[in-house]
Image 1 (cartoon, protein in one colour):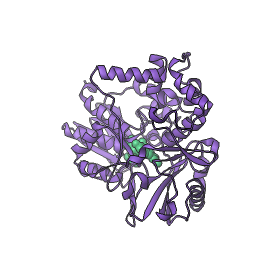
Image 2: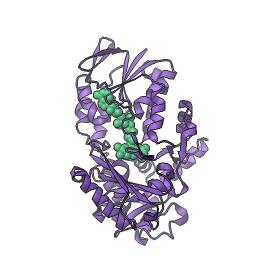
Image 3: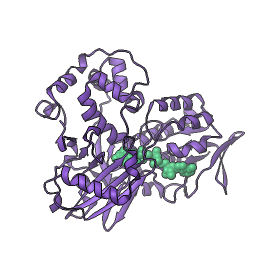
Length: 445
Ligand SMILES: Cc1cc2nc3c(=O)[nH]c(=O)nc-3n(C[C@H](O)[C@H](O)[C@H](O)COP(=O)(O)OP(=O)(O)OC[C@H]3O[C@@H](n4cnc5c(N)ncnc54)[C@H](O)[C@@H]3O)c2cc1C
């Protein structure tokens, strides 16, 4: 059976890898000259710069995938300090409690907020709309301080999003389900853990990883084993009798089945002919721009900076950046031993206008802010800006309608595995692709 896969990011490549293993004849179409999508690494003067994902939270299932691809020896685990996450408050970074062991001694949250967290277990839930926003959900379950100083920075960090716009059901389904099924987030989590234990499936803790030569090296290893047609922008997909036609302005290909693995924005046009309602719903999903700014310092310059995974900046702090990953703390091989790299994020849903500034201004503002918030004593040796025009699809209430349209308009032989159909993190994309390939025969019977 011939299968056409649109999009050569991790979703499309993982799908092709497992379907090939099952004996299907897969062709991946990628519009850019280099596949990988959001996974993009630059090597400049011996330094390794991640333009997209930096750290990947893998479980044993993902490690098994990497082993099957033949790349396990290239995995690197994040340094232990990655467990310390910081939040900016009154212009200074404060470490968050890392778990119950230091929840009471840590001074980041007020006593009132700690009480709200402790009593969430007993708080009754009230029936609300399925489209409730993440912000309203957290305000209802906790309080304003949690919304401002935990939720807001984390939503910026994960989704580059606005908690007042994302839907809890779509963005954090496990929290939504916990409250719905058990009446409380904490109760739900405890019960789920117990249920898993009783059924013999333990809840596995994930670990942060990358690859020795950057995340793109893994993509390259995958590409080498697959049939990837780069520089081919799929213009449309049509169904003629029992075949699908994938075409651009010059060429046409015929397939038995088609898998959509392209990003949200680009998929609108591709889907207009074949499934217009899905295309229409996709038009409602924003993907805001984001600049990834790398700053390299001498080790001496950052000797007084805090150590950890990185720091996130709540909107209330009025900072220029949404936060930074202290890259060299977690993956020291990104530069030579005398240097230190910090990766900063500018933009996202709440700061679109900042991404439109000239690159030099962005660099200047980032350096200025890092200097004061991280106690940096000298200017950066080198800076680099990478701009994503459409960074991360937003899981707003409209995405629930999109998922409904995908389900109800199901066209035989057309499948979806994307970062807008079931989780945006790289491991989520891998999980979705594996699930699709495992169920592939059942879906077609
Ligand atoms: C700045 C940034 C930081 C991130 N950080 C993290 C992180 O630290 N950890 C984490 O787990 N995740 C992170 N993510 C999210 C994660 O990287 C992405 O959600 C994931 O890589 C998406 O993979 P994908 O294959 O679904 O889509 P994409 O990577 O978007 O790939 C889709 C591909 O489809 C191609 N395409 C589109 N239209 C066409 C067409 N018409 N014809 C042919 N090809 C087409 C595109 O060119 C693209 O290559 C980050 C994302 C960004 C942008």
